[in-house]
Length: 128
Image 1 (spheres, rainbow, N blue to C red):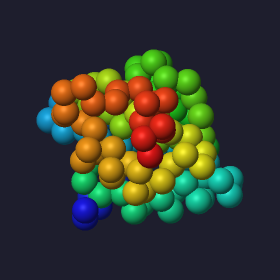
Image 2 (cartoon, rainbow, N blue to C red):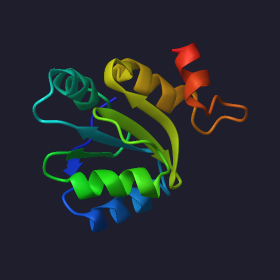
Image 3 (tube, rainbow, N blue to C red):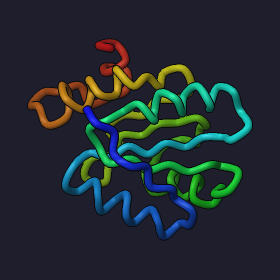
């Protein structure tokens, strides 16, 4: 799958673009730290994911956006963190070493949109 350009979130209002884009297809939202080696490894994985619109934010520069993500999508804050958002809802949340390009792409192609698909993090992690 060819990766799409990454849109950087800088202000809270930028989250509207994430929600809007997720209405027509799943999107990826990556939160990371610019100074953490674990975030750097996770970012390498995120950059390699194709098949979905991609958004990112650096917690050092967009802490208010990071907090708004947690509130809007009812998910705990973590960094690094990768969220798959479909129709305005988080369908997969991965953190730290769980962020693997191959597993995310497999989830996007195998799980989303299928009747009876694994929709919880635990079910997905068990499969991949």
